[in-house]
Image (tube, rainbow, N blue to C red; front, side, top):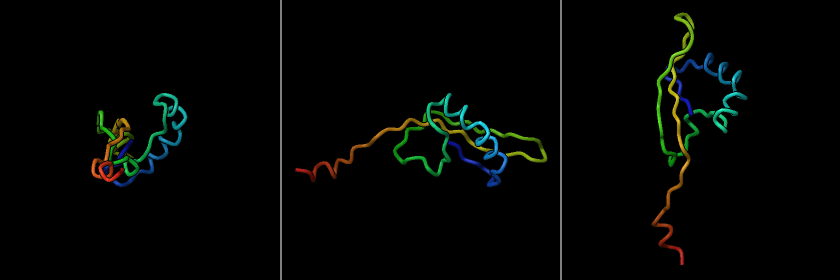
Length: 80
């Protein structure tokens, strides 16, 4: 997952689209915008980064997550 801090994500999106295949091979899954992070995902690590030069830079946060599931005990008690 990634989250762009400054709202100007053109540079970040260019880098990610150019490196999409490499990211997929290394991580075993595509990188996603944090807006698509499931509410039940477990955050393993976070890292704030900045790429580019002073004239054209982009700040973002990389979030390593592990998908997980959660049991809805209320719904489970209603079954049966």
